[in-house]
Length: 166
Figure 1 (cartoon, rainbow, N blue to C red):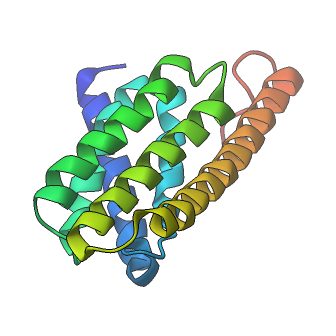
Figure 2: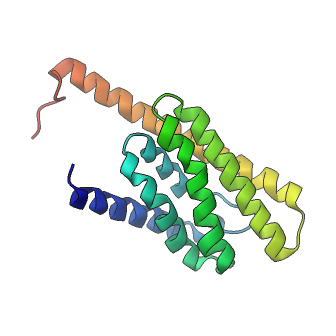
């Protein structure tokens, strides 16, 4: 794959992450958070160059956040990338576990950030946000696993290249 194509994929997935986040903005930010765009991070397991979309998508999506500032534009992209590293390195063999790790790291990081900014209790925030992150990553894993299974079936039926292109 050419570097141009890889950069284009990074840009497209980053834009999709931002668009999905903006689409559900009322529940994508804050103490009660359900950011479905996080499930896209699972793509890093199969398209390793997409690790670069994680900080880019996170930073751009967080421009709309009520917490915009150093926390949302620097701390959270860094923590999201750290959370995604196990998916990058081990996701092909342990996708569900590494996805949960990502959910826990980002959930605890968001809770920490909001607790500092809002001067509120960390424990309740951590439980709420981490639970939603793990649910989202599990749903993403189910979707991704189903997609891969369908691709594999197509390859079995139609040879190595998959079904004929129309």
